[in-house]
Amino acid sequence: MHKTIAQTVQSATHQLSYFADLMRQAHPHLLAHSLAAARLVEKIIPFLPWGGNISTPVLLVGAFLHDIGKVSWPKELFTKYLLEPADWALVRAHPVTGANLVRETWPDVPGQVVEIILQHHERPGGGGYPRGREPGYLALVVAACEVVDAMTHDRGYRGALPVEMALTEITKWAPGEVVEAMGRAMGVKVA
Image 1 (cartoon, rainbow, N blue to C red):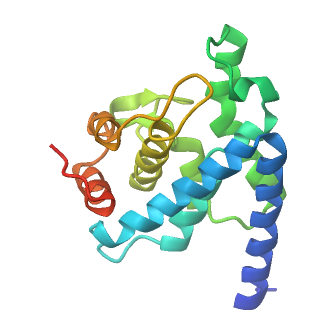
Image 2 (cartoon, one colour; image 1 turned 60 degrees about the vertical axis):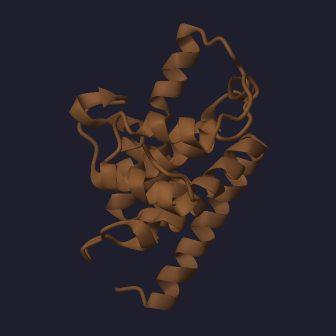
């Protein structure tokens, strides 16, 4: 039986609310960062060259859920400065943990959302983690937005950095049009 559009929207709304609750319970920063990353994706969309083949809802949901795997972390890991090898293992595993959690609890999740979750820490040329594979374009869009948000907000181990510094960082691996869109959306000239 096929779901109606209303049933699909209701299911998605229920699932996203569930995931938001999980993030809020894990650490208040996690939910705030996930929402901010999705808002930044939404902000740059008008400046991206879509070509009509990218689903905005999928991109926004992927941005919101990109760090859902962190709900499995111990609370102290969110603010820990010097990470031990066991901590790094949890950090590197969170994309896989998140993708598995989403697949298990939301069986009809769009596959591209799962790919964004899995790939948001992968980098071109096979750098990054968890698999050291080439990321897809949507994952790079989300990665750029989440990195800029993370860098420009206070963390337990450092203060917020200037937007220009964050944009310089993402130029090392994000597609040029994504960096340019970010700069335009934020009113910052990209060098």
